[in-house]
Length: 148
Image (tube, rainbow, N blue to C red; front, side, top):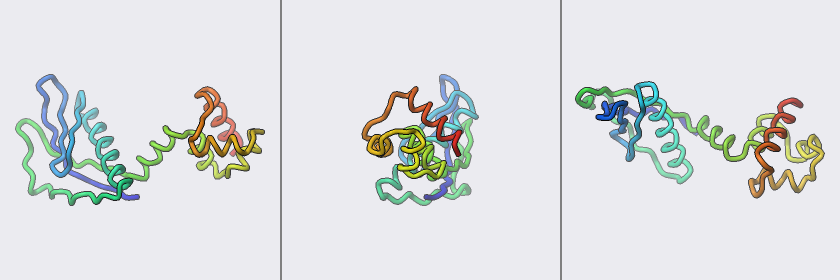
């Protein structure tokens, strides 16, 4: 529902790569190189902000860059997170049929008609109460995409 930007400390790790910490948030992540560390930091921030929104928790105010000092041998970088984009990824991974249906603008009845499947079955898939095997899910998604 929102976009967030937080500063992150990137510190070279003894074993190689970078450790990433956020001065305003609990937790940390790491990456094998700078680009991997930035990607992992964005994923960490996305999950953290999305979880806070889901739980109704407020995010802290990010510390201004001019009040931060880079760690020895490291640097400070701003990391952005878009919880709408993160939510879409989670929905796509958790319920790919529902995600494809919504993206195609189909309601449950239209999807059931398109697939020739019982309405109740498609309703169960949509709610995530039961799902067909992954290979069937892929075929369903292909059919949805081909018919939109």
